[in-house]
Amino acid sequence: MPRSRKLPTRDELRAWREFIETTELLRAVLASRLHHDAGLSFGDYAVLLALSEAEDTRLRPTELAEQIGWERSRLSHHLGRMQRRHLVRRDECATDSRGAEIVLEPAGRDAFQAATVPHLSAVKEVFVDALTPHQIAAAAEIAAALRNRLTRTD
Amino acid sequence: MPRSRKLPTRDELRAWREFIETTELLRAVLASRLHHDAGLSFGDYAVLLALSEAEDTRLRPTELAEQIGWERSRLSHHLGRMQRRHLVRRDECATDSRGAEIVLEPAGRDAFQAATVPHLSAVKEVFVDALTPHQIAAAAEIAAALRNRLTRTD
DNA sequence: CTCCAGTGTTTGACATGTCAATCATATGGT
DNA sequence: ACCATATGATTGACATGTCAAACACTGGAG
Image (cartoon, rainbow over all chains, first blue to last red; front, side):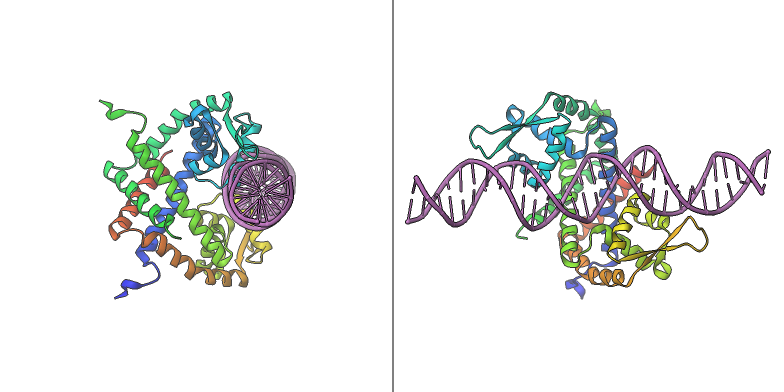
């Protein structure tokens, strides 16, 4: 009868714990490898990827933040750190003097290019090759279902 | 021929991105709720859970760190913060004067008890109820497969 | 007994993340 | 033109995470 229970069952909770802990471990392992192989953090990589794909390799902060799903203040702090390392540069925006434009610097382009192959190899090794094709499809569906729940109404 | 390709295909990469970004969002949402509902972080909750389940509600730091999968230095920093909030206490260890024993304090017990139901409700809402029973089982299997890969040889 | 390599834990320096407050400029209503 | 409010972005204070070094004791070889 407890179709309408409010709390997870023991098995559901076990699945939850295994799922959330493992995905955290997965993230940590990949982040650690990326840092070891290319000296970039996950955040660095996300920023550089978005900039690399952007027209003219430049983006407004708000747009960049939306693309990678970050709050603006988080991005701002991170850009400060990346700027110190000459990976990106802040330009003034021509059309809105409040605004800025984040520009990919040569060092950022180089670091991103050097990082890409090792990073994708690592993804292949610890994600793609760890799962069957069917499981990969299932993972994508699960993610879609979760995202659907997370981003509605709220 | 590219059965032995070293990099993910476009589809595999899409699945990867959706998976990793969504699990991060999931974690962030649950952490935010837990903090809002009970004033505890994910880390606080993990520590309090382990201590609550421990015999005599006390544990050696190294044991505690292993149970929740943290590095010892991370745990030490976190315990310092929790101690300031009177959630836990550090006792000297009777059998090894180098060592310590982390003890659950009344405030920690209360906070954990107050946090549990809202947290599990949230897990039910954003994880269990977002997926079909079949998907939950698949999620557990995927996590097991990933963990298997992550924790072997390396 | 003495020394020293090993173990348990903490510390310091720094990278990263969140939240609320601030700053500067843009913009629409009067 | 003027101002109230909205918008783009940054800042400050603080929580959290990693890494390497330091610290404090243990336990066994000589």
